[in-house]
Length: 152
Image (cartoon, rainbow, N blue to C red; front, side):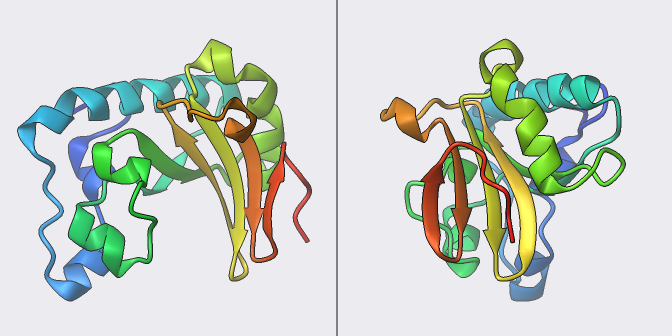
């Protein structure tokens, strides 16, 4: 099922961890409109970067979110968020640095550059956090910082 021109429901629910553990990662029907909004946000990001983007994680059932160590309040469980990389554009840092000044224009509620356990990706969500200072942040093994910070 296509959610947008370039993104499918299968792509936004795909999970090797779910497959390994036999977890059903099918979203409830009421979450489909949120996933469409997320796919539309991803289209705007793709158009801005002018390269394909790879979704490494998007919708996660609560059971899958627990299995991957996600926080209980994760936007992934509500269909609002996706973790992405764009190797054709550059590093996760370069992607986040480009998107940060455009969050409002692109409909990105929250932008997080993440560098955890040697892996780097960009988390984007359609939902704006209650604390606006958390709208654009960097999260590493050392903790959180405001804004997009260069990763080691």
